[in-house]
Length: 394
Image (cartoon, rainbow, N blue to C red; front, side, top):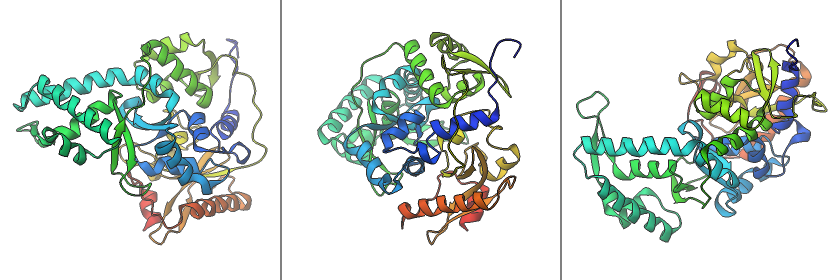
């Protein structure tokens, strides 16, 4: 390139994705901690996504449920908590301080202010009352270790108090103090989501005290989070980084400068990698296929997606809010989608048949069989359903 920047084309980006996202067969991980560490964050809004994302990347997929439950609820090496863009993710525990300082503090301040404002507008008790309830609820949670909101409300009955939100407006509703307060405590890094009430697919969960961590400088934390993500997912555009982090563009640029990120050229325009990562990389040793779940971080972590997800496939693979559904991958690009039928069968469909011959179809079928072998009798329905997933599951 005339400006001295190395150009990283689509083929090389797909090679990097295959290995760093643990999708090529030789790159598969030994445990869920390796998967989360490689991806930085696993989308946790839909609990099943975490397990399906891990299972797609484990060398021994049979260890998915037991290994992930151990990491989340026994060893505490993974934590499900609020992170970027006010969204729930699963992070390696050693990253909790970085995530909280880099993204949580600003969101937490807004959430608490909004709760107090809404309570005041409804004539509900004031900040001093809320502080007493919060202290009591946290003490009850510490005694119990883990608890549902209903269990905490038995210990601290004031959590059952209700107030009217947006009175007189079309979206008027009645909010319970427990629901709003626990959400605020989550983004403040005081509580995290614990063991589910049902199976690993259950969206009902207990709360648990957050792991202790030191307070960090927000600017330094942003630099560290961005460094880790670029190492795992780079190269990326500035828009990718702004979208994934939810930060202001000035914060993204300061973090890039702080880590000495190296500028490269991409098909979309300027991009960035961590220092020393601009050189050519070896690709996977052979072709690969993957069945990734709805909201999987490989599909969702970037704003610029054309290099791995053809725009014409999006109407069938995304819902109206921009959430990706289950996807079928072949050699670094999305070629279709999959679903689970009521009888448990994993079914899939190719939407982009370019280069999809017998070898590709056999590899995709093998991945579907591998997925079905560990999911077993459990029924998995994405929280955010997409047109193709609904059609295949019917």
